[in-house]
Length: 327
Image (tube, helix red, strand yellow):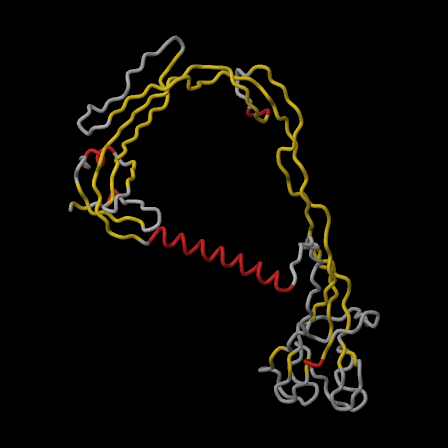
């Protein structure tokens, strides 16, 4: 934040005893009407256009309030000029705070309004839907019951992708175009945005110095805007490995010899990604059938015809296959 000093001015105060108004905080340490001492807590900022500038006034710091007569004295004073009391234990005068005017906020876009009962019912529906959804999720995750499970079958499958290089069309920013790309064609497109300073927002504030004067200051904060950042977006062709076919192997028994499929590669081909799946089919005591994929080791331990006790989700019927116990 940048601060521009606009000048120093006198605070004002009103005499609480004779009613004299707009006395000067620096020049009138006592009321010229009745002689009453100035009270630091009675100082206030003058209205716009009524400021009295202070020239060449030495600033010693905020006033201290005489502990005997409560008269504000310069911080440089060793004794009270009103009653003569020592100022050793005098407390500093409290500063007058001024609320900074808030910077104008951007006007929000008007939203369609609902009136009366329609608005109330609309809000009620939203709350009801979200409440019901949250309750449903909690039930689905935590509400489980014990049930008997019979393993009715198995299946397993393994696959290997066979890849071959082929020309594919892609797009990328110019700096990311891979070496060896062909048919490169680029055009200017917005890539991102950047935050740049667009100016300043300044607010004039008044700061109580605590000695009957105040400073007028411009506080300026930079403002920013978003500017587009452009780059070269390119279309091109490049040779890449693509899946042309998939070789598979599988079976339905834990007694099978589980192996990867035999792959015979043709010219320009190579083996790609491998995947495997081990599925157990089961029937609950209530007659419902289901299936679940699990690890090979767990799959092999669940022989067809074996019975187990399982934790079954009340919602959805999902089974925790890692927590089965023999019946």
